[in-house]
Length: 276
Ligand code: SF4
Ligand code: SF4
Image (cartoon, rainbow, N blue to C red; front, side, top):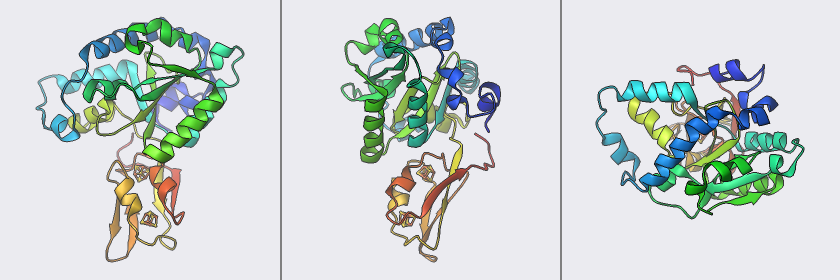
C-alpha cells in the first residue's frame, strides 16, 4: 500500500475508494484552482520542441528546480500507474452514479502530447464522472476536441487502446484525491514521467502497486516482452534463455503480460526496494 492509499484509500487503493469519485471532490474549488491555470498554461504553450526523451533528459537542472517540482507534485498533483483491469474497475465505480452526466466519460486530447509533439487530434485522456465540469472548466483547451462516452463504450475503447497502442495507464489527481482522470501515456512525451527521470524523484509519476514475475518454465526467451516494456525492466538472458524482471525498474503497467505468447508473465503485489 502506498502513502497516498494510506492517506486517501480508507483501507483500499485510493482510486478504488468510491468516495474518491464523489461529487463533493469533483466540484471542489481546489480542482478548479489548480487544474484551470495548468490547462490554460498548457493550451497556450503548444508544442515546445522538446520532442524526445533524450532531449528532455539532456536539459540542465536549474537551481531550485528539483525542490519546486517536488513541492508542486507533493502538494497537488498525483499521477500513478494502474493496470487496464484497474481502469475498468474505476469505470465500474462510476457506473454506480445516479445521473447520466455523473456516469459519463469524456475523451479529449492528451496535454503531454499536445505540448511536446503537437499531436492534438487523437483523444487519449479520459475524464470520468461529472464530465460536464470538464467542458465548463476547460473550454479553451478542449476547443470542441472531445467526445462523450458511456462507461461501457469507454471500457471497450480503453481495452483496445491498451492492446493496439501499448499505452501505460495512469490515474491522475489534481488538488484533491479525485480519481476521475485516466491518462494513457506515451513514456517518450509524458511530462510527469520525464520529470521523474530527469530529476531523480518519484513524486511526479508514481509506480503502480504491482511487479511482474516470470515463470521460467513457460518462457521461451522470444524477447517480445523485453522489446515491449516501456521502462526497460526486462532482459532476456542469452545464457538461461529466459526473461528476467528487475523489480525495482518495473512500474507494474501490465503491458508485458498482455503480449507474452506463452502466458509466462504475471503481475503480483509489489515489494519495492525504493518505494513508489
Ligand atoms: S514474451 Fe513471454 S515467452 Fe517471450 S521472453 Fe517474454 S516472458 Fe518469455
Ligand atoms: S516489466 Fe512489464 S509490468 Fe513491469 S514496467 Fe515493464 S511492461 Fe510494465
